[in-house]
Length: 514
Image (cartoon, rainbow, N blue to C red):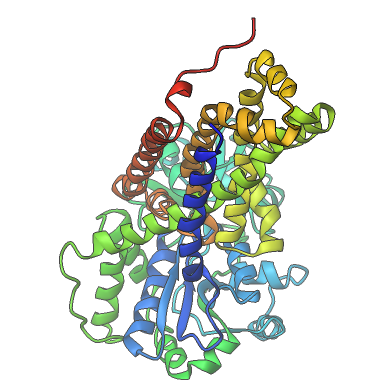
């Protein structure tokens, strides 16, 4: 009992695990022959970015690093400007909103000038215009005789759900309401693929859609005609950092061979291969590139080799996030709990501030941290660390307050100083409580770390985000099941650690003072 065995061994183990992972997460040196390819969380973005990645790998001048499922166009553009991402398939309409918000319908020359000022280059169109549209159930369209967007005007009881980007853009729904004079009973934000399911189950009546969406026939949806020409063109283009184009000129030229290769009908058919027929994104992308002779016919991966690789990488990323944040929470949370007991007023203020942090939604907290820390692992680790402080600090406080006051008085009579009492008696006897709080933090971190995929930190969230974007339950389960198993394993591990590290006499909850 004269040693803090549980805490010292646990913190040493966490420090070793996270320390060995740190080198692999360090920023690549400038001479790195890697190109980071981004993709946003919808099917078309996954497919086109996968095409770019395969072209990069086939050219051999560099290796593609996939950062798929990032939270949205603003996040991706910020990553490109900061040099944390290198390449993305974007759309001229979205780029105009981000770089020339005050210029209505900017020309290509104006857009190119704005991009160059941020060190970015743009390809020609890939050949298709994927603009916004309003989708309704085909049966409802027939019943209410809806063919054009203006036909919605007399129907004020309809319910709408739209993607956040579509709601916020100047060519989004709020502006569309002003142009068309459309009024709805309710309007709410909703993820794209979930809105289609909500339409099918009649929870909503209309949503935004993409004109090349391959899932439209599957859900029996009708696109209303934009009879007032409200929506601008959204030509798909390759957005790349100028530095990358200069460093890898052959790769840039190979990527530009994709220009003009996809019509609206072709892109819709390619999307349907994933959305409707549930084929792998990588296989669909490779098939298109081979058919159009943009890459050679690569040897397919050995069956079973890929499950693996992607799942193992996601597991390593998830563990890195969880353990790094857990270590930080322990290093600060335990002292915070001690302060809350030793200095009651100051400590209670600190605990109250820590509790307040729990009320900040995880995505909102990440948005606050991204401008400071960029995208990737660091803001996720910091957010998880903040969320983990309260369970660790409160369990430490509860453990210390549970001790029999007569025991503390006896230690004082024996002449032990406050630090000696804390080190030799109080912390060892409270160790069971402290380990319980650390276990709670670990399990919470495992679940919360799935949001990391939205800012490019990987982990199991990459499968969950992809599955939601493509409405593929199998892909969702590929991330959800390992997440649940990891949480169970952490719970079992800490139960075993409690039996192994905590002295036998402290295996049961300490009795409170009478």
